[in-house]
Image (tube, rainbow, N blue to C red; front, side):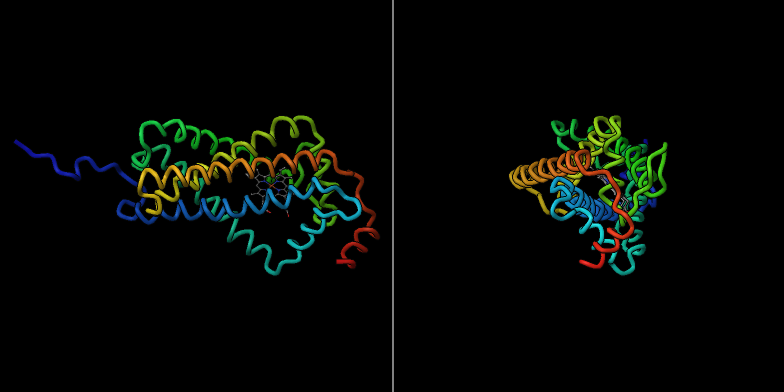
Length: 241
Ligand code: HEM
């Protein structure tokens, strides 16, 4: 008679023994991208402040584009974290990694929605980043010196305004809020049921506030004056600030 050992029940994992480390890296990269997204949507929400007397959104974009080593910041804090987070997230989903054990039965719906929102975010982000950076389907690319005008042209497209962006924003806000909730479990910060419930309330409020910021950006962008500044006006704005 043979006796089953613990290793007979081990699920094959990417990196085997390194799974523990990779799992934390997955959580960390999610938190880093989440931090970026909070700033990104808050900056975009300034579109609701309009362009008179000052174009507040353009001022924020000018400040961001004046940062030193912007390309390194973008790759280090946005692109590399999100690429790793996405690839490892797909691996976890396809192999049914044991992190599902984090969730009590009643939280299963949150778990499924986390995966569904991830799929929407990946598709949304591919479209969003490529259309902003290079221009797609006749949409102009994002021009930092003409920030409000170029974003307004994007958001004045009815399919983008009513379908693509609302979906992308809802999926992102949900994924961020639920991801921050599970991250606290991953790092052992919320152990008790009461702690998880209280942190859940905080994450829920964060998700709703972020959603409001996203909608403010959409409304502001759709209403913004889409007439580009002349080069002289753009230059004057840069000189003023
Ligand atoms: C109304 C909502 C949004 C607006 C107006 C908006 C606007 C923009 C603009 C103008 C850029 C180009 C930035 C630059 O080149 O300096 C950009 C980049 C980006 N956006 Fe959004 N965005 C919105 C929502 C989102 C959402 C929901 C996500 C999350 C999935 C997202 C993720 C990104 C990423 C990853 C980049 C590339 C990072 C960069 O190069 O700056 N955006 N967005």
